[in-house]
Amino acid sequence: MKNLKYILLAVFSLIIVTSCDNFEDINTDPNKPTTVSPEMLATQVLKDSYRFWNPNPTDFSYANLFNKHTAILQTNPNPYQYYYSYYPYGSWGYKNLTSLKSMVEFSAGSSSESSYKGLELFMKASYGFSATLEMGDVPYSEAGMAEEGITKPKYDKQADIFVAILNDLKDAEAYFAAGKNFNGDIMFGGDATKWRRLCNAMQLKVLQTMSKKITAEQKTRFATIVSANNLMTSNADNFQLVYTDNPNATHPFWNGEGIRITDAVSKLVVDALKTTNDRRLFYFAEPAAALITGGATESQFAAYEGAPTELGADALYNNGQAGKYSLINKRYTLSRAGDPMIIFTYAEQCFIIAEAIEEGWVAGSSQAYYENGVKAMLAYYMALPSSGTHGMAINQAYIDGYFTGAAAYATTKTDRLHQIWTQRWLIDFFQGNGGNYPQFLRTGYPIYPLDPSTSMNPDDPTLYPQRWKYPTSELTTNAENYLKAVDDYKN
Image 1 (cartoon, one colour):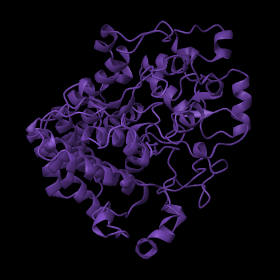
Image 2 (cartoon, rainbow, N blue to C red):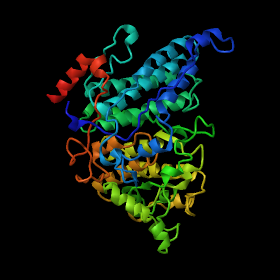
Image 3 (cartoon, helix red, strand yellow):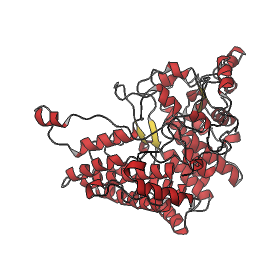
Image 4 (tube, rainbow, N blue to C red):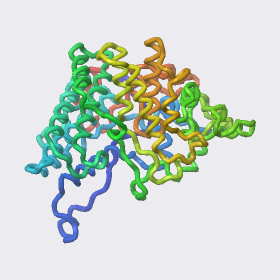
């Protein structure tokens, strides 16, 4: 398979394996349940799918490098910063499909059965969407069918996978529409209405991700979903994992001062925020020590300087030691709960629709959607504790006056799209959630710095990586279909 085309995304995986009680103990200990409820399975699947893969400050820090949100100030070059990876292989969450099927079976006859069916389809679509963006052609139609005797699923074409995902999301929405609120949901608290809105919003995201090859019929489908107006309505609908003070559910970067002092905000982020006088800068970053020494104050934009992510590791380290860069804000290490992990937001939905209006897919005011998206993200940060914001906390008056100067909606389509894409990219700052890289590959914006002299892409240091490699386990567990997918890709 052509290594040239592998996505080497940030070190992030949506799937982790968590331990469960020994089966024998369950059947002998009278204080433990002898059956598994659908809500228990729902909780476990959602936890496995959305909890950060290895919750510690170092891995969480590295997870933000590939999307050029941050830079590491260490002498040892980090592959994720320079377009490579310690482990350049994709993964799929299909192992959870068996649990999801059991969840639906155990809910049979209950008032929540329809909602659990919706959750099953939504999660399968999510796993497939992630896998195909990472690796291209992957199993989908036959995924999770080991109990039916299919242990070596075929690899479907990416175009067919997108269609199947859209159909599954549509069916999931219908199940949630007919369903009731359900237990075991750590994301929306079992609110079937919010899940229904998310299913519709995710269809928009999938359709836009297909934008270079989308059909007229699919554009019509996009417009139909928007016009039906059963979408996310505010930040209250954000799909996010909320951390807590529970030691088993804290923010991965909590207590990470040791890595924070070598973790700078990227020049790409700092410059974007300074251009629009965006106060999120004061939530994201600490002022550069050298600029403070030079007379700037922490509440001035001039006190902040980002690190060029393409610069060599030794130069970044030396400049960091000299205090030339703004480090990650200390607030990220101080709270066990910290910022939620954002998966999909009302703001992103707004930016998706704004772009679609610019492209003529749907009628409406792209400016209104763009501004609503920005306001939503500013309000999101305004709602966070204001300590650690360097005297520049976001308030409603600031939000109301945001759209002036460079922040005003642009006069040309190209510039407007650049504004939309930049704001969408900023949503994922320091989230450790996989980020915006597939959207960068689709749009090419914002322009990620790439220096062939520092790029670690082993196939061509002048190119942005496109794909992760298939898991090596496929060579032994599904070799025939794996090799066919490789041959099809070469041809």
